[in-house]
Amino acid sequence: MTLETPPDTSHSTARTPRLPKGQRLTEGWPVLSYGSNPRIDLATWEFRVFGLVEQEVRLSWEQLQALPQVRSRSDMHCVTTWSKYDNDWEGVRISDVLALAKPLPAAKHVMFHSYGGYTTNVPLDELQYDAALLAHTHNGEPIAPDHGGPLRGVIPHLYFWKSAKWVRGMELIADERPGFWEMYGYHIHGDPWTEERYS
Ligand SMILES: Nc1nc2c(c(=O)[nH]1)N[C@H]1C(S)=C(S)[C@@H](COP(=O)(O)O)O[C@H]1N2
Ligand SMILES: [Mo]
Image (tube, rainbow, N blue to C red; front, top):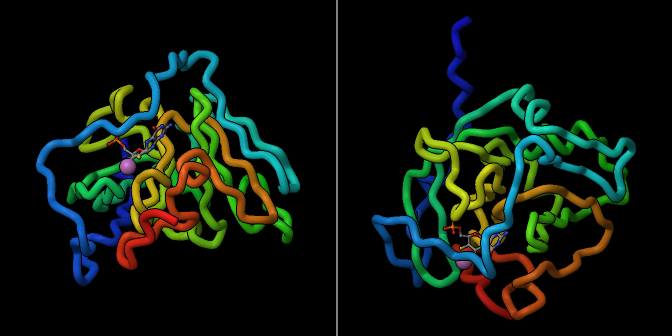
């Protein structure tokens, strides 16, 4: 069997300006985690899509791997002012996973839930583009536990606190609701190009 190269959905590396105001480029990859890494066993790992959906979805690790795989190059921007260019992610499109659950018309926002209890909110509309992923691979390697492996969100058009590490579910909700950092004063939306840092 030959492994197919996943289709390329690269995005956002060609924005002008590429580096948002107030950001500095970093060569390494800082670890930004509130609390310690959760212990995760792939044998019992499960991803859930629930809330305002027609069909609640539960995916095992094998079922996630069986979905269409894509790769996408994008930049990351942390609100603490570091940015990292040219990250090659592989995983599944968030929009594909949402489609499995058939969001109800009333669903307007998504709350991401992580192992360990972290949460973050994103408007449903902003998850429909190809570069928004649930990623298991970064620059050709499985994502390390410090960086959110086995699976993390990648939502490159927003500050990276919106990209939940150790992600385990998406909850479809009607009204915008703050996640973890949003409750502690981070901006409810988080666009780096308009510096939606804190509220
Ligand atoms: N579950 C979880 N996801 C998280 C965080 C966290 O503390 N817990 N930190 C966020 C923040 S503030 C940033 S900048 C990125 C950092 O990802 P990295 O540690 O892989 O650089 O993850 C985001 N996702
Ligand atoms: Mo961050």
